[in-house]
Length: 58
Image (spheres, rainbow, N blue to C red):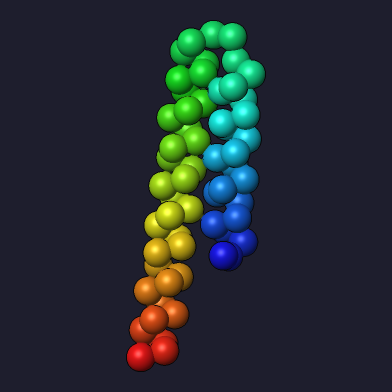
């Protein structure tokens, strides 16, 4: 994993933890949406890195 995907995953974990510790429903939901967005960004970077590696290999 690259530094950017690690960063995205770290942010997702932080948002998930913030959501778990939130008392307010809207704040919890916002943090869960943010965590999902961070994970999606990490997934995209990881897929691109994997595709790039496959292309260089082949």
